[in-house]
Image 1 (cartoon, rainbow, N blue to C red):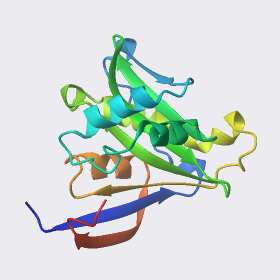
Image 2 (tube, rainbow, N blue to C red):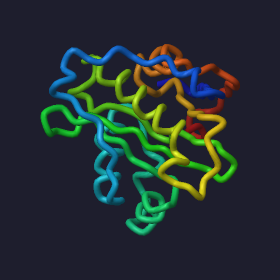
Image 3 (spheres, one colour):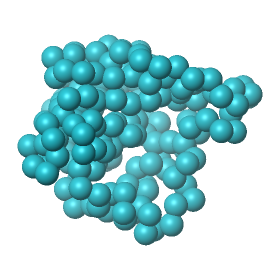
Image 4 (cartoon, helix red, strand yellow):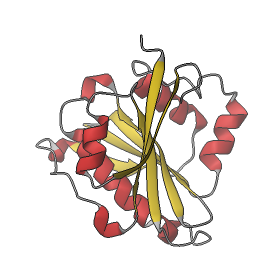
Length: 180
């Protein structure tokens, strides 16, 4: 195991930066829906299931109330990819007051990786980040969408972000115990 973790910060600064992925061949069987009813239990399930094998640990110890506060925060949205009714992955958006939207989490459950669902989910989720203020009128129009990924994430994460038009704006390397 590496003693350091590299974290890359990426952004888009205009809606035209988004380069959509091709719709997956299974598109008739894949749909992406917003989880409009905030559910701490469902969000915890998605987080734990997607992140179990790629070192997502920062939220695992959260009590139920912290999960609830997070998913019920105005401007926070969870977009879920389903294949034939089964959750395949998700993307979590967190709108901020200054027109900035963070893609806080994005990923697929292990059985759904490598099937071209991730690029499609990232495309839809990023487009929803750009039009977040339409659903949350108290938010300023989006002027920037950003995310971070690290050397512990899946091997195709960075390439997917860059293919969707995200550009690196910062890189940090830290001891593994403090990264994340």
